[in-house]
Length: 327
Ligand code: AMP
Image (cartoon, rainbow, N blue to C red):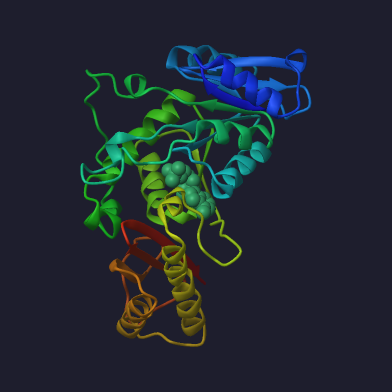
């Protein structure tokens, strides 16, 4: 893709085509997405197909099923980074058709959270996906996902009540509901999630099992920046100093992993150390810093491997999460 812009803004779009040193003749596709126009050029990667309504998705899925093609889905809220792209790559390698969904799901945000401010970067998202291969983007409207009469919600499993559930009590009901809807809409054979949201994977796996959803949930490793910071769309909110402080999360996980692997088993000491490291590193507040069993998310003292160390902490106004499986 070359560029995009608001549909009514043709002069600006043409300027940007010229800025790229291209002539209009070489443009092979112009795609409309709601009020945006995207321009594709023969020298640039293939366009990503965008489906923006359920009405359009249904025949596409029927066609895939008719051809016995397996469907992989990657649910996202957009503002894509290399972490999301790793999930799309996993799907490309394991399913015949890969659908990346882009939907900022209002029901998983509490009224006090950052729904309105959440980054929306569709043009860049399509550009990045276009470079990976043949990917279909499903970017439904809120009215399509939550029509006014659709008041049914999923009650998430017990595992959702701990950790994130204590600090974001309505979050997993929103996540479980939207994930179930997306799995049903796309009729996915496999769905790809990041271990970055460790508890989310556990909740989705349990929900799929409990509700007999015929979809395999695949968990993919956390993708980090070179310095160790776990990639997150919310990192965009961090100032330069905030980003330095944010590194404390992965450094704390490095340190606690090496201490546990060297024989530290006292659960209380581990938690105290983690909190101290985070405070020393300058985080503004800690929601939790804990080591738990990866299956039921329960603490045990003394610690018995495997465990997962999980952190949720605030740096300025940004809430960050990270975790490490220690085996
Ligand atoms: P989000 O757009 O934040 O809802 O995330 C969509 C999916 O991308 C979720 O399954 C996340 O766990 C996953 N994800 C987000 N960040 C990363 C990362 N750094 N590494 C791997 N997966 C990630």
